[in-house]
Length: 264
Image (cartoon, rainbow, N blue to C red; front, side, top):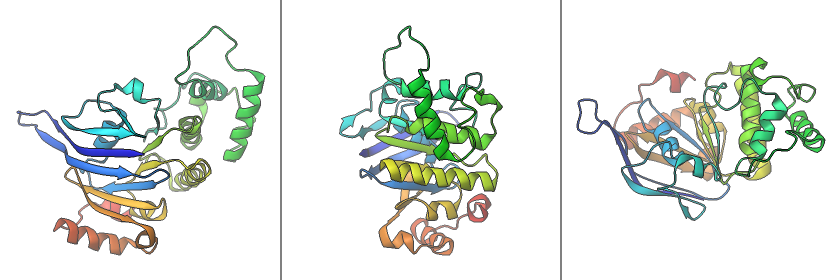
C-alpha cells in the first residue's frame, strides 16, 4: 500500500544550517498494516510523514501509494489518497463551522462543489450515528461550533473526518501528544476501533514507547533519517520498553537519551 524507495531530503543545503532529515529511506507498508513510528527528536519521523503527504518535494527517491507513483504530485492532489490527523487539535478542523459542516466538508473531499443545500437531513442522520459511536456526547451537538469543543473532542472529530472516506493511507502525527493522559487514552481507543473496523493502512508517530508497543501490528524506530528497527508479529506482542531500549542500543550503537520517550 505504501512504498518509500531510497528517499532523501536535506534542508538548507550548502549552508551552516544544513540538515539531512531523510537519508536514503526505504520503507514498505502492506495493506492493513498499523505501524507505529518512534524515534528521538530529529530522527526524521515527521519529515517522513510530510514527504508522504507532499508538503514539500523530496531530493531523490520515489513514493508510491497503492501502486500510484505520487512523488511528483502536489499536496492537494495527494489528499485523495490520504487521511491525516495532526498533533494540534486546532489544525484539522474549521473552528467557526459546526460539527456537521466540518463532517460534510470531509465527505465532499475530491468532489465538485455545487450550489446546493450544505448539509442534508440524510447526512445529519448519518453524522449523528457516527458521533454516537464516539461516545463523547457529541451526537446532540451537531450544529455546535467546533472551536467550542475540548481538545479531545476536537481530535476525535478530526479522526472521524480523516477516515470518513476510508483513505488508502491514514497518517497520525503524534495526534494525542497535546492531550491529557485520560483523553489521549480515549482517542487512542477510538483510533484502534476505527482502524480495525475499516482495515485502514495506518502510520502513527508517537513519542510514547508504551503506546508504540501497545498499538498496531508493527513498530519501526528511526534515527538520523533511517529506520534502524522494524518489529512485527509475535516479537512485537511480547515487546517491553526495556526490550526496545536494548534493541535500540544494539541497532544504533548508542543509548537513547530522550526522557519524553522513556517516561511517556
